[in-house]
Image (cartoon, rainbow, N blue to C red):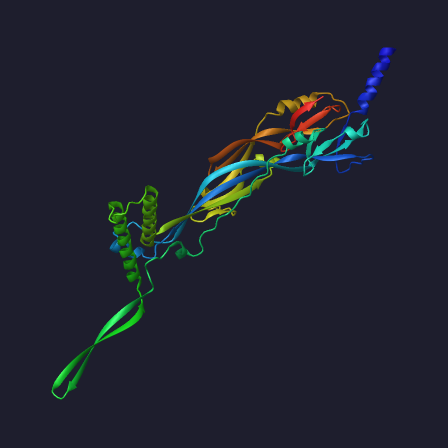
Length: 385
């Protein structure tokens, strides 16, 4: 008789400290106070880094061979794009199809009940300390930035010794006849005219020669000044930079910019069946959101290939017998292989990721004392009975 009383007392205490969790359906009718929470679903971010090369023709490119002897120069302005890197990162959002209600009627001391929810209402843990909650907050992702190209192509070039005007001197001969004497008078007439492009090119070429002479004099010690090592190297570097800047007036220059693009994927069951269009890429234009069936090799697709890690767990859950009183619901994500494919089938990126949507929803026992979930996936991190 005494043993029977102890068993009944244990059952009463157990029932007073257990949870009852119910999945909320569109027709659910809840009659008691409780707490709602979501399970998260997986969001995949695809980050593409594109390098843009802007080839700028030098304003004196047509006179490069004549004045500098350099014939291999940029002859026209153009753009070229290339994909530098492809990366995948995971995030999460509430899965509105997995809303759960925690019935707290059976809790003996509701003040000791602490259900931690993330900012978006997803399950984070049960009865966790403040430090345990802080350890589970994922690091925020940094934003992307785009660097635009120079709006004026000639702003990329510096002019130091090429003015726009020059002084033109004309000699005028005037004849004056006095009786039998002829007097010839010479008059110099000065005027300011605009320099031709060739004149400007010659000025720049002359200045390049002057910089080269100054560099040789510095190296040879022509000034007979004992510069210290740091001063000498700085002067030499400035002369090199100045010469290179003037040379670009003939050879042209390349301005490089970096662009970051982010594509967001929310995996769904039907995505496993066939490749999904992601973006188009052209070496002369960069990334486009428009598909082009005429240039299949320029189109990029993604595929999600589901694994079979959770098949055994699902079979065991279907064959098992469990209590009608359920504890907290949680996710068991399934692994999937994310593939990014170019054109007819060239794989340019591959990684394995956990996807909640392809996995299983399971329930914990109703009498656990402390539970911690992974906020990104809603899967178990640790439990304490």
